[in-house]
Length: 84
Image 1: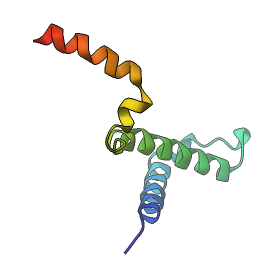
Image 2: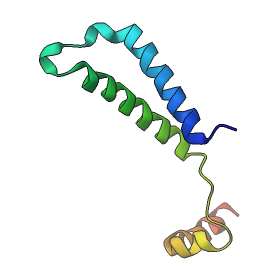
Image 3: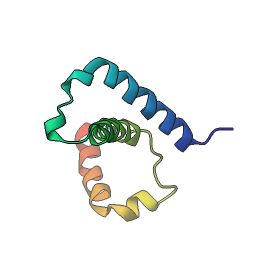
């Protein structure tokens, strides 16, 4: 079974190759090494993936969420009264 990290690495590699095929002409040797250009593409794609995946991270179990942010639980009561 493949790990999540292996799957992410494979997806990033595929996206970098596709990006190079589409936008490889944007590379300018005056601005740096081609390896840095490729690494930048991979880093940008990885950041975009992380932002998209953040929405699917699980919440802490039980009362841990309330312990993390007591201000949320205090603000929730007046909002519930306004809706009702």
